[in-house]
Image (cartoon, rainbow, N blue to C red; front, side, top):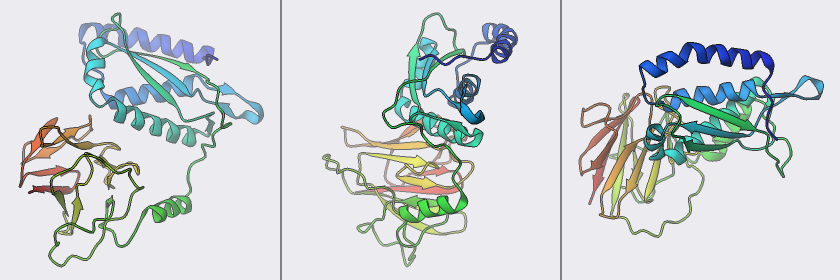
Length: 288
């Protein structure tokens, strides 16, 4: 079922297109993930349906149409970006006290009639087997309980990750990384490699790389969770390549990555002794 946009929202969208359209035509630029996120929020807000007791039901299916060029640029990190946009829409619905039938479904499409930097979003209220999803904001107590369930042992402030029992000695530092949800075993045999994570306060922690894909960011579903406002929800990704190299990718983050003192690098083949910075934390890569 298609969500119906109210007349006032239609008029506002029309006026916005009159203002933005000529600028987008004269000064085309690629669409940024954070900008697309804001447009998804607006699409949710504009297409809610009034339910009983004054509650509003938000659409849970979003078809996003972008230019071929923008689609190619977003495709590299599409899975991570879509997951980030989904989580953001859930948080937005909680903040606005909207109802959701299910976890939002976001489908990214390339369309030749759309210019670079432009976006068209169509929403729909899809069926769900699980009933209406509660989207009330988590209380501080609930958030603390969730983090307690994810944690194990002591924690380096701001950094959360799976515990590492086989990593090299940290030189006397006794802090342990908090655990994230268990990951399925990886069939690929990885060479010994690890990250030494250091904060500005001088604290140090070790993360052993035992998966072919390691996600870094603020979201709780990451392998290494960095609680820093300058860090994006899904900030970076370390991927083990078939040629035996570890490569770090920037996932379209707001503040990017600094690697070996060079800023805004989108991807880099990690070599023994390389240093990269995310937020206020330095990561030192080592391998054998």
